[in-house]
Image (cartoon, rainbow, N blue to C red; front, top):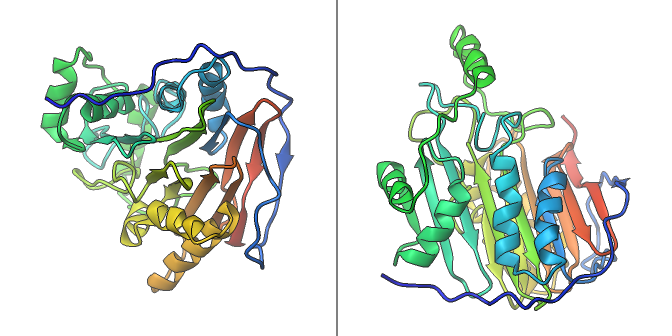
Length: 330
């Protein structure tokens, strides 16, 4: 089987400590194609939603001691996968309409190596399985039973991912079976993370339990390279959150990276990608999509259809939660 080669840990030590939590807020798109004024020194890590703060803290422990971006993003999102209070990722994730918790994840490094799993059951850390798909198989994605069998072969243990709280919520939902798809302030659906390490190399990761009470077998954008996540080490990286079907239709994260290749700032690229989604869909009523991007300079940006999307950003100089700009309010 194919073995992927990764950078060895350099043993470098980072300096500085995480600063106090701060929040910045914007509520309108930029009007000019200019370079973002938000420039961070390397290494740096960003991730979607408030749960990204804790995930970033874990990732930063790796980055500040000279670890690779790939190790950082994997370990960072594992924190959220193991949090039973989070109902959109890993343990405690909202099940499908049949009561099954199925997980999707993908990971990508600075050399275009990537791996993914979809519709994976009873495995706590799909992001780590995705990495092994990348490193130990000739494939990019494994799904369903095949993904689970591969995980078990690699030493992962079966685990019941349906917590009592998630089960009770599912049973209550079954009373009406009202299937809706809002992804808003209360209903986050993903953690996606991008990082740059001391070598200036970038990696990204995305993991989720998917849309709550989805049809069994439904897979959104989260395990699809180019949709939920894309990294080009010459340009930068991007990741997505929200209704996956909408992101897939425009190959969203790849689109953001290509817009940065054309010279747009991460902020402007995210805005343009959201505008493309809005143009390609007859209606975006109650449908949230957000993009997060970072270029090789460490400049970041984010934009969403509706208000409420935010992201965590951590470096030597900062540890903050940032509210993104948006097109409209709920």
